[in-house]
Image (cartoon, rainbow, N blue to C red; front, side, top):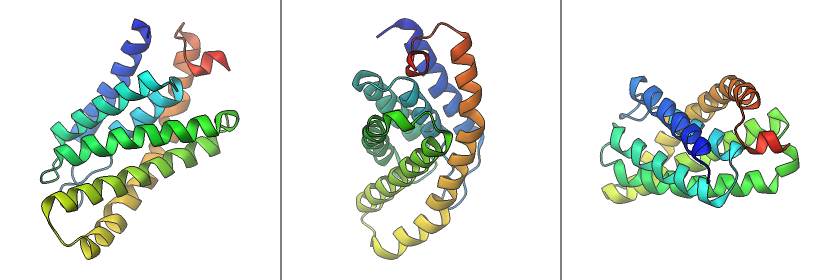
Amino acid sequence: MNTKNLVLMALLIGIGTALYIVIPGIVQGMKPDFILTMMFIGILLFPTFKETFLLGLTSGVLSGLFTTFPAGFLPNVIDKFITAFVFLAIVLALKKLTANMVVTTISVAIGTLISGIIFLSVALFAMGTDVGAPFLILLSSVVLPAVAFNAVAFIIIYPIIQKLVKRSNFQTSLSQA
Protein backbone atom coordinates (compact mmCIF):
# COMPACT_ATOMS: atom_id res chain seq x y z
CA MET A 1 0.00 0.00 0.00
CA ASN A 2 1.43 3.31 -1.02
CA THR A 3 1.25 6.48 1.07
CA LYS A 4 -0.26 8.56 -1.74
CA ASN A 5 -3.11 6.08 -2.06
CA LEU A 6 -3.70 6.13 1.70
CA VAL A 7 -3.82 9.93 1.60
CA LEU A 8 -6.34 9.91 -1.26
CA MET A 9 -8.50 7.36 0.55
CA ALA A 10 -8.32 9.45 3.74
CA LEU A 11 -9.31 12.57 1.79
CA LEU A 12 -12.27 10.82 0.22
CA ILE A 13 -13.53 9.49 3.55
CA GLY A 14 -12.81 12.85 5.25
CA ILE A 15 -14.82 14.75 2.63
CA GLY A 16 -17.61 12.20 2.91
CA THR A 17 -17.60 12.59 6.69
CA ALA A 18 -17.73 16.39 6.51
CA LEU A 19 -20.68 16.23 4.12
CA TYR A 20 -22.37 13.58 6.26
CA ILE A 21 -22.12 15.81 9.33
CA VAL A 22 -23.65 18.90 7.70
CA ILE A 23 -26.58 17.10 6.02
CA PRO A 24 -29.58 17.13 8.39
CA GLY A 25 -31.36 13.92 9.40
CA ILE A 26 -34.53 13.00 7.57
CA VAL A 27 -36.64 10.30 9.25
CA GLN A 28 -35.75 9.24 12.80
CA GLY A 29 -32.29 10.80 12.40
CA MET A 30 -31.31 8.83 9.30
CA LYS A 31 -29.71 10.77 6.47
CA PRO A 32 -28.20 10.30 3.01
CA ASP A 33 -24.74 8.86 3.42
CA PHE A 34 -21.92 10.70 1.66
CA ILE A 35 -19.40 8.53 3.50
CA LEU A 36 -20.86 5.55 1.67
CA THR A 37 -20.60 7.33 -1.69
CA MET A 38 -16.96 8.20 -1.04
CA MET A 39 -16.27 4.64 0.12
CA PHE A 40 -17.63 3.37 -3.19
CA ILE A 41 -15.43 5.81 -5.10
CA GLY A 42 -12.42 4.67 -3.07
CA ILE A 43 -13.16 1.04 -3.88
CA LEU A 44 -13.52 1.88 -7.57
CA LEU A 45 -10.13 3.62 -7.48
CA PHE A 46 -8.42 0.92 -5.40
CA PRO A 47 -10.24 -2.40 -5.96
CA THR A 48 -8.07 -4.56 -3.69
CA PHE A 49 -8.75 -6.45 -0.47
CA LYS A 50 -6.46 -4.31 1.73
CA GLU A 51 -7.83 -0.98 0.55
CA THR A 52 -11.41 -2.24 0.79
CA PHE A 53 -10.75 -3.45 4.33
CA LEU A 54 -9.47 0.01 5.34
CA LEU A 55 -12.22 1.89 3.52
CA GLY A 56 -14.96 -0.31 4.98
CA LEU A 57 -13.65 -0.13 8.53
CA THR A 58 -12.98 3.62 8.58
CA SER A 59 -16.26 4.40 6.85
CA GLY A 60 -18.15 2.30 9.37
CA VAL A 61 -16.45 3.79 12.42
CA LEU A 62 -16.87 7.39 11.21
CA SER A 63 -20.50 6.82 10.19
CA GLY A 64 -21.11 5.24 13.57
CA LEU A 65 -19.49 8.10 15.47
CA PHE A 66 -21.54 10.76 13.71
CA THR A 67 -24.84 8.95 13.26
CA THR A 68 -28.00 10.50 14.62
CA PHE A 69 -29.84 7.17 14.51
CA PRO A 70 -30.42 5.75 18.02
CA ALA A 71 -27.88 3.01 18.84
CA GLY A 72 -26.48 3.36 15.32
CA PHE A 73 -22.75 2.85 15.94
CA LEU A 74 -22.57 -0.93 15.69
CA PRO A 75 -25.06 -1.20 12.79
CA ASN A 76 -22.97 1.34 10.85
CA VAL A 77 -19.72 -0.54 11.41
CA ILE A 78 -21.25 -3.87 10.41
CA ASP A 79 -23.11 -2.40 7.46
CA LYS A 80 -20.17 -0.51 5.92
CA PHE A 81 -17.75 -3.39 6.41
CA ILE A 82 -20.01 -5.96 4.74
CA THR A 83 -21.14 -3.53 2.04
CA ALA A 84 -17.54 -2.66 1.15
CA PHE A 85 -16.73 -6.28 0.34
CA VAL A 86 -20.01 -6.88 -1.49
CA PHE A 87 -19.32 -3.78 -3.58
CA LEU A 88 -15.75 -4.98 -4.23
CA ALA A 89 -17.18 -8.30 -5.46
CA ILE A 90 -19.56 -6.40 -7.78
CA VAL A 91 -16.70 -4.25 -9.09
CA LEU A 92 -14.44 -7.25 -9.69
CA ALA A 93 -17.25 -9.21 -11.36
CA LEU A 94 -18.02 -6.28 -13.66
CA LYS A 95 -14.40 -5.21 -14.10
CA LYS A 96 -14.67 -4.69 -17.87
CA LEU A 97 -17.94 -2.78 -17.52
CA THR A 98 -16.97 -0.40 -14.70
CA ALA A 99 -15.63 2.09 -17.24
CA ASN A 100 -19.26 2.60 -18.25
CA MET A 101 -20.79 5.31 -16.04
CA VAL A 102 -24.29 3.80 -16.22
CA VAL A 103 -23.09 0.37 -15.00
CA THR A 104 -21.00 1.99 -12.27
CA THR A 105 -23.89 4.18 -11.10
CA ILE A 106 -26.22 1.17 -11.00
CA SER A 107 -23.56 -0.66 -8.95
CA VAL A 108 -23.47 2.27 -6.52
CA ALA A 109 -27.27 2.25 -6.26
CA ILE A 110 -27.26 -1.50 -5.59
CA GLY A 111 -24.49 -1.03 -3.01
CA THR A 112 -26.47 1.72 -1.29
CA LEU A 113 -29.56 -0.48 -1.19
CA ILE A 114 -27.56 -3.37 0.28
CA SER A 115 -26.05 -1.01 2.83
CA GLY A 116 -29.46 0.31 3.86
CA ILE A 117 -30.94 -3.16 4.19
CA ILE A 118 -28.02 -4.39 6.31
CA PHE A 119 -28.08 -1.25 8.47
CA LEU A 120 -31.82 -1.41 9.13
CA SER A 121 -31.75 -5.14 9.81
CA VAL A 122 -28.92 -4.86 12.35
CA ALA A 123 -30.29 -1.68 13.95
CA LEU A 124 -33.83 -2.97 14.37
CA PHE A 125 -32.57 -6.34 15.65
CA ALA A 126 -30.23 -4.61 18.14
CA MET A 127 -33.04 -2.34 19.35
CA GLY A 128 -35.29 -5.36 19.85
CA THR A 129 -38.12 -3.91 17.80
CA ASP A 130 -40.56 -5.78 15.67
CA VAL A 131 -38.69 -5.80 12.38
CA GLY A 132 -41.64 -6.04 9.93
CA ALA A 133 -43.47 -2.71 9.73
CA PRO A 134 -40.65 -0.36 10.85
CA PHE A 135 -38.29 -2.02 8.36
CA LEU A 136 -40.62 -1.45 5.40
CA ILE A 137 -41.43 2.09 6.50
CA LEU A 138 -37.77 3.03 6.92
CA LEU A 139 -36.80 1.22 3.72
CA SER A 140 -39.33 3.15 1.67
CA SER A 141 -38.97 6.50 3.41
CA VAL A 142 -35.20 6.65 3.97
CA VAL A 143 -33.26 3.96 2.14
CA LEU A 144 -34.88 4.25 -1.29
CA PRO A 145 -34.51 8.06 -1.38
CA ALA A 146 -30.90 7.61 -0.18
CA VAL A 147 -30.29 5.21 -3.08
CA ALA A 148 -31.43 7.87 -5.54
CA PHE A 149 -29.55 10.63 -3.71
CA ASN A 150 -26.29 8.65 -3.58
CA ALA A 151 -26.59 7.73 -7.26
CA VAL A 152 -27.00 11.41 -8.21
CA ALA A 153 -24.16 12.45 -5.89
CA PHE A 154 -21.97 9.75 -7.45
CA ILE A 155 -22.79 10.95 -10.98
CA ILE A 156 -21.65 14.46 -9.98
CA ILE A 157 -18.62 13.60 -7.84
CA TYR A 158 -17.02 10.61 -9.61
CA PRO A 159 -16.14 12.34 -12.93
CA ILE A 160 -14.48 15.16 -10.99
CA ILE A 161 -12.39 12.70 -8.99
CA GLN A 162 -11.56 10.74 -12.17
CA LYS A 163 -10.15 13.89 -13.79
CA LEU A 164 -8.17 14.83 -10.69
CA VAL A 165 -6.70 11.34 -10.37
CA LYS A 166 -5.77 11.19 -14.06
CA ARG A 167 -3.95 14.54 -13.76
CA SER A 168 -2.01 13.37 -10.72
CA ASN A 169 0.38 10.47 -10.41
CA PHE A 170 -1.80 8.29 -8.18
CA GLN A 171 -1.61 4.60 -9.00
CA THR A 172 -5.26 3.62 -9.17
CA SER A 173 -7.32 1.29 -11.29
CA LEU A 174 -8.11 4.36 -13.44
CA SER A 175 -4.45 4.88 -14.30
CA GLN A 176 -4.11 1.20 -15.23
CA ALA A 177 -7.12 1.27 -17.58
